[in-house]
Length: 218
Length: 231
Image (tube, rainbow over all chains, first blue to last red; front, side, top):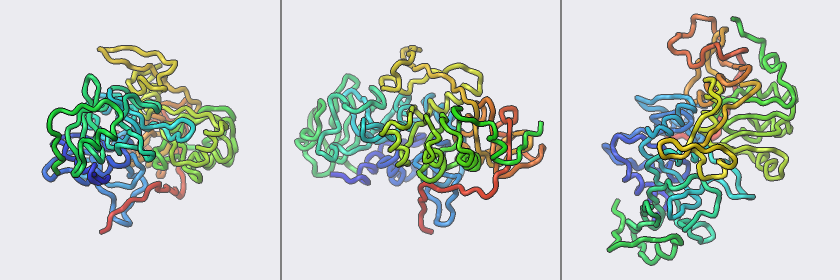
């Protein structure tokens, strides 16, 4: 079974040289720490920055320089700053190659819910609805089951949707799965030490298993 | 063409109860904090505020919420404010949550003189309820209307007396699109300069969009999430 860092590390393998990548808040943010050596990527922060650099050194924080998670950050050589309309313009126009975000639920046809629990949590969708509506390559990073032990990979989402038919790949602490175009979660890889049986038990949506399922390699 | 006013109080002098305001900023970054302080002091009520976030409990729009000056918030993300969440869940505050890109582009449309935009954001979700859907090239898009705001209040780094503005770093965010979108646009700046001191090639917001400008003093520029690494 993977911890959060492990999920981030596995997702980082999906990033290809030359990609522009938008990382959501939570586990996706950690992916930045595991981008393989020699791979040149540019991180987009939807508040208006391409080329997000590391956190500043202590004492060098600049309140005018933050990422979409409102954390103080730095720029890199080649960074560019723009306004919010252009930021979502480049997202809508599919210039961003990969979007990685968290989710509360994903359905077997690729619907995603991650912004609202009616009556309980109302934080808002931020940029998530824009991202999932336009991105062609969306990877969800999340736990396979919720705190109550219920599967988050479902036949249908029960929470208000963020977007429909959009998730392409899911990486959890147990597995890597593709969302098939005709519906269903196709099991691609098992986390180290996790059996196919355990993944079956934790998945309530349609799970497609073909042949031997290899263990993840890092 | 001199648009300089004496300070925040004079800049907001004719903002009254029930008006619709746009406020620039992302989180607490690039927030027009001097005008917000003046609005809190003035005590105008029943406001509709269009702003990406709702501040935190003791800074930004949170200060106006605490005084119950806001009737309705139009935002994309309001997660950092306990008082906001309380007013929302108790029904005291009306809230319209909309996708962040939709928010920015509805501002842009107003500034570009376009009545509406089409975006795929929100298709198939509750955001789409009651809205016109159009299909272009096989994909569904929602029609979203340009905003109509009485005042836009923005924060820039530098500005000249003619209202030309330059922003700094990610404090730019929603400020340029909101500056273009108000019937009256108020800009507060850290440094007010004479015409000619800003390079025309480097202007982010041309002064034609700005009606009033003043230099604020002693910006607090609060940091929401201070994240650092060791030297």
